[in-house]
Amino acid sequence: DADVTQTPRNRITKTGKRIMLECSQTKGHDRMYWYRQDPGLGLRLIYYSFDVKDINKGEISDGYSVSRQAQAKFSLSLESAIPNQTALYFCATRETTDTGELFFGEGSRLTVL
Amino acid sequence: GQNIDQPTEMTATEGAIVQINCTYQTSGFNGLFWYQQHAGEAPTFLSYNVLDGLEEKGRFSSFLSRSKGYSYLLLKELQMKDSASYLCAVMDSNYQLIWGAGTKLIIKP
Image (tube, rainbow over all chains, first blue to last red; front, top):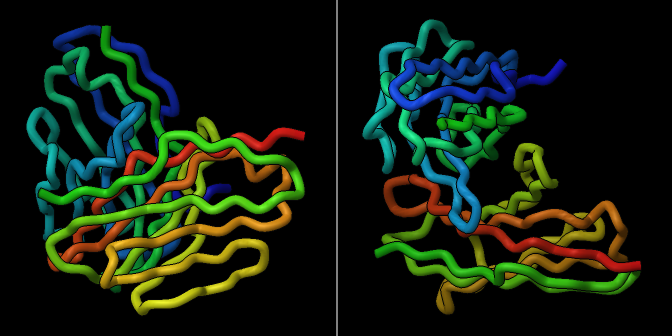
């Protein structure tokens, strides 16, 4: 089993629908991140969390919200999906160090029609 | 603004050597990462450089020059499985990662 698991892996939805992407990890890391990846662009940070009580906005948080339900779980929500949120979304974890490597989930491909 | 530049695409031959360059302009510097990403898969960590010089790890090496804002990833003895995108990322003064768009490496037999 993967250390960082994302569900769903693929989702097609319609404009205006609420969508939740879930991430769970077995690495025991405190730090968790949500990124989106678009063709021709670098990974962009949406939200990150250093522990259950610490949630921070990234560079593109508008239109998204997150919930850190436990150390191992970090969910990303799109309250009202729009087509330009069509992208590949990655969850990642990191040890409690600023310069450690990121461990990514397999990705969730979201299409908003 | 902060910027990471790397070539969009490169082609190389199996068994050869290829160098993928990355130049950066960021607010401060706390290290540079290289990740490999196969199509449709998650990025995986390759290397981290924070001091100038060359770090060798098997067939892969990564070089950093902080004064020039420049890094490269060197892949030797290329194999078909090395066909992937290679992502350069710089950690700025706030310990935020700034990502390049990635270099798609195509390996031909």
